[in-house]
Image 1 (cartoon, rainbow, N blue to C red):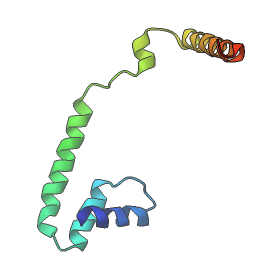
Image 2: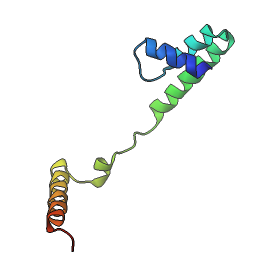
Image 3: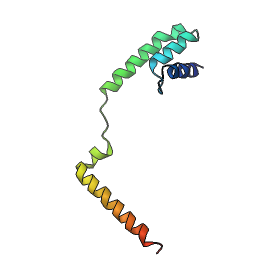
Image 4: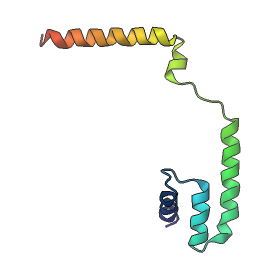
Length: 90
């Protein structure tokens, strides 16, 4: 019920993601104002936790290779796949 209302509110704002302010607006609209402050507090705590987390490395960063080296490897893989495809059935 709350999620549905929050989704409608986010769509009215032309947003694809439901944000905390959409949830609090939905709670107000549905007559649950007593939950607004706890939801805002939880959203703020979550935001603080996320700011303190280490950013995960993506695969490119973990590879230890330069972008040029990765592109070279990718091109070689494409050449090999193309050659194998053009050979036909074995």
